[in-house]
Each structure stands twice: as C-alpha cells, then as structure tokens.
Length: 339
Ligand code: ASP
Image (tube, rainbow, N blue to C red; front, top):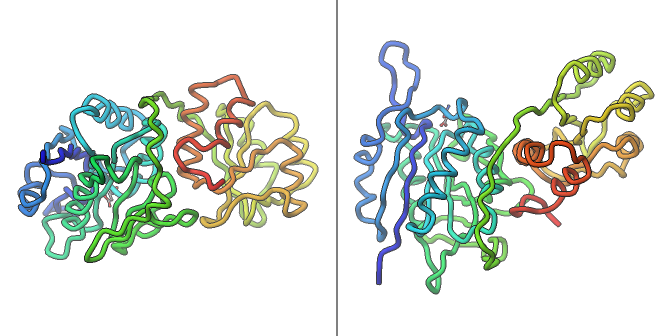
C-alpha cells in the first residue's frame, strides 16, 4: 500500500524559536533546524514534505493576509497530499484555525494545527509529541478515507475542532480548551477518535473561500462603565460590526440611553459573552431581552475568536446586506455552532 503523504507547513511560533542570547527573548529560527531536532519523524509511516515561511512569524504578527497565504499554499497542494499539518504559534492559533475552517468548505482532508509552549530544542519540550502526533493524525486513514475531514488543533494529547478552541494558558502545556464542544480525539497509548463528533465527509466539492475585512470594533463591558463614553467611541469608529462583550448569557447594563443608541444606528451589533462556556440566550433576562428587541444578534455558543473571523469574512462578502450577514453568521459552516 502507498504511504500517505503529509504536507508540513511551518509558519513560526515557539515550537521553532530559539533564545536570543543577549536579550534572552525568544525569536523564530530556520525550519531546517526544526526537523533535525525531531529525527523520529523519519520513522513515521508516511511521507512528509515541508514548506517553511521564509520569515517565520510570532503568531501575534499573523493577520488575515497570512491566513490567505497559508490557505493558498494548502489549496495549491490539496490534491497532492492526504493531510496537512501547520506549525503555528499558540497565541493566535485559534483564530487561524477558525479562518481555515471557513476558507476550506466541504473539506475532505485533515488540516491540523499544532505548536508548543517550549521550543523544540529545549529538553522538556512539548513540541516533539505535538508535532509527531499531529502528523500521525493527519496521515490516518480508515477504509482508504481520511479519519479527520476538518480543521483541528492538536495540543497536549487532545484533538479539538479548531473553530471551537480558545488559548487559555500561557504556562501550562495544556494550553487550549474547547468549552462548548467535546474533543475529537484523546491521545494516550492509542489515538482514540470520538467518531460521533468528527465532521463527516459530505461528498460535496471543495469550496475555497477567501477575503476578509478586519474592521470590527469590540467593546468590553465592566461594572460602572460609562455608557456615554461607550456610545461616543462606537460612533467615532467606522467599523460596521460591533461586538458587545457582555456578561453571562448575554446581559448588559441596559438603560434608555443605550437602547435608543442601538435603535438609531445602522451598525451590526453582536452579543458575545465574557464567559467562555455556555451560550448567549438574550431572552433569559430582561437586560438581554432589551438587546434582542433593539436588534442585537446573539451569537449562540460560538467562541469570540470564531465570531471575529466569521464576521471579517461576512462583511467582506456582504458589505451592505445586514440580513444576509445575520443569517449566515448564525448558520453552521464548519461545526462552529451547537444546533
Ligand atoms: N508568541 C508565540 C506565538 O504565538 C507563542 C507560542 O507560540 O506559543 O508565536
């Protein structure tokens, strides 16, 4: 039988960083050193080809242009490989995973992102195991079809749906959580896939979508926030989409001033909770209900990262169509919402 082929794309991140001896801060280094740090890769039962960004990035410098660069690279190679692994910094990995999940619609191959908390060269690195297992998962077939047909993050023994994840720790190896959706696989002695939760191949043709408009405004509410100032800052910002970071199931300190303002502007307001787990239910309390009546859109149980990325895609696609925006935002594209 032919060995599966995996394309490994190195974009940067701690996994491939080295300590700058003068300043003792971490900076990305050449990818050749990454693979030579992990000779075990040669023992895997798959063929690995690698592509590296010429200038590896700390993922805090990654933006929608980088998502397109990564997407184009995968799209160009889509027919030639059985799976894709992207080495990426952890800081914005959840955003990139969300973006790719919307860019590659009707995916029938795995795109697995991974990285690490400690650089590969360090003795206690978590990068080796993350890298090796991510490649193994990307090469897994069952009855000649890939096991994973979606964009996922593999980190510290767990495989998560990418657009459900959030980075929760800058210290623990266990850096990611998926609060509103179970993990797709747990890795111990064996890789145990949760087949009920994995997206199924829908046998539709791959649809590669790109184009993002980053003009999104986010307002974080806190007890005592001065509503007059909130309104002033939203008014002075040209962004069409405003994310209101609310409490609990979608509640805000609501009064006439805010309600009148919400009713008077053409902007699209999204209600995203400061709580990471659970969903927006604007009907549950009077404070949320008033937001609903004023046209604010509750985002169900999508993560903040996913809401931002999906909004960037939708305002670029339907800049003038609020209804279409709302309709597609609240529809599942890649398993990002629990129905
Ligand atoms: N600053 C790094 C990055 O996101 C952190 C990491 O990779 O863990 O690129």
